[in-house]
Image (cartoon, rainbow, N blue to C red; front, side, top):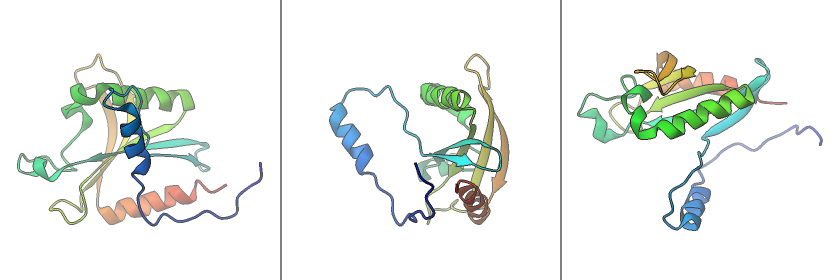
Length: 153
């Protein structure tokens, strides 16, 4: 297979695949995990998996923002998802990042929590061990764009 010299830029999201899967499951529970992003990182010579975690506006009134939320707060609700992501990352020898964010135009839109996952162990009181960086939306954009460039082959 040849090397690609160009790639298309993203201009909009496409939720049609998710809608198709929901339709095909016809209400059945899913036993799969959808990836938000997976890419090769030439600098670290490994795959990088990114999972985006939306901090919804309804959480703001309870003091939960992208900078204060963490998967340990709701691990019991999404344990299978986090454990599957961790297992896949281990199988691929990938770096796993979890990214808290809020929708653009909301009160905490400028807060992003970039979490590099060090370990996930469901038997611990705090099952998700991360190295956290509280950053702004523009700082995340710079980090993400740099990572994106490192995926070019």
